[in-house]
Length: 266
Image 1 (cartoon, rainbow, N blue to C red):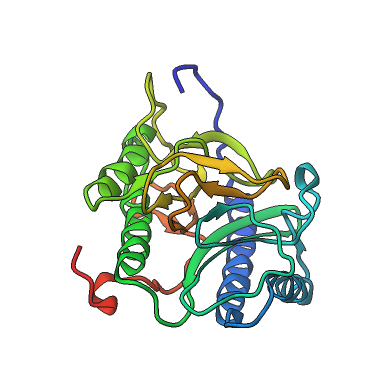
Image 2: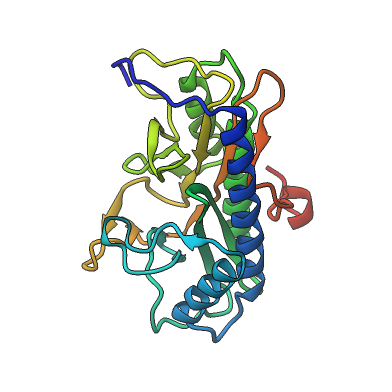
């Protein structure tokens, strides 16, 4: 991040299109989250998401992106991100991370949530609550004039304070006509000069947080990222518009892992 990078600024007309893409992406994500239950295969979840996206006139952003073979990313427990739907059946006690991108009229909404399946451990409840809250810590920094490094650093500062770690090999990103635009949005404070955010920038902010070590491995499929120690991971993401006032969450949905709802004190 030490180099000067050109970060796209969206026009009002482009922002309106991004709002539509974000709203549809959120609708689909929430519906797919509600579809998660024990016994379903991850391939069934992937197919269901594809149906919902098609019904709304969109296309799955991830399908074919760098040859990715599925409609969405679905990752379970120690799988951090980029899991591919298949024969694996969802079990009670699982943490299921769903990452969904939807392209509408050439513009992209990108969002993710981690869903608890039935009764989960106290530690996993704390992991979900800390990860979702770290997303909102970062979103609060998505304001005109704030250094991007402050936004990034807020995630690691928050999760480390509760005994968890961020994944450093994967980052959030700008988003618009392309899935990955400038700038990179790591979940830790990067070294070097940090650009200042400007109104009209749109960021996909996505904390990826591990219960154990922050290191990760890639499985043989070339896509699925897993925790190096095989402990649980969680992933929450929103597409966020930087403004001169409060940030605008383009993929808004009700929060699901509030500490007070879970009986967990952070």
